[in-house]
Image (tube, rainbow, N blue to C red):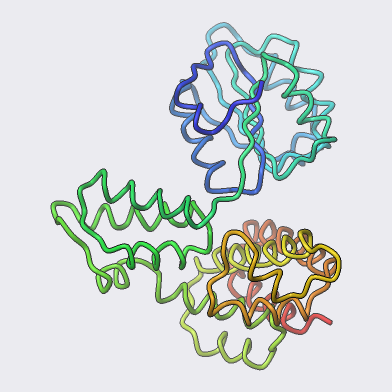
Length: 328
């Protein structure tokens, strides 16, 4: 059963136990998962697809060997792919009445067996997510400021959205900071936004990633050495790199025949800011479609490794960014 994102709050899922949320909008997927968790009672357990596949017996034991006195449980399975299809297909018809299973997957194409399973069965819920446009994120920010009766200029909202790199999750984090800061204030200005959020630091992250993708290794090294990054910036640097790499891949995928890079960039949606157009053109000249695909795979692998080895996180990211700038 396909549910659109705007329908979630209007639906009750008392009789559904399996949910598949897929797409590359991580911020929106996290919002949906959090909303589902709030609507269900029970303890939450996060698992990874690889953990389940490696030890299926333990997973089945969690599902089926429960007493009548066990509390309800919510199991979230992250980084799902086609590899988990058979496991899910085997358990959907079995009794797991006191367990809600939420699958968090990336993009699933139309041929996906996992996607097809959830779309065809009314007892299963599938929620696709799609990329946010700049307009979508602007509306999220405007609604936030309107709801809390905070006066803010359109210019400041545009800047806030622009610096969040199309990442809804990052925008929400910045809005949460603003909410704590504002309290009873009726307005907030550009200078306060700069001080309160990570906009200044985020600009240097943008510059670092753009320079790396432009394969300017010397300048990449200079930015790394001169900027005062914090350990928690590692994930943000990788996410920014991933977002910009995916944009390059999207540009290649919509390219039709001998259309020039300039025309491709001018027609791209969401619109690329005029000052970024020459940078994106340079990046397209330096990266083939196949190389970009390889880069995206390696970014995801690096983030997984980073989360398991946080003590060397920032140095790991710096090495990866520098190697990217040297990629031939």
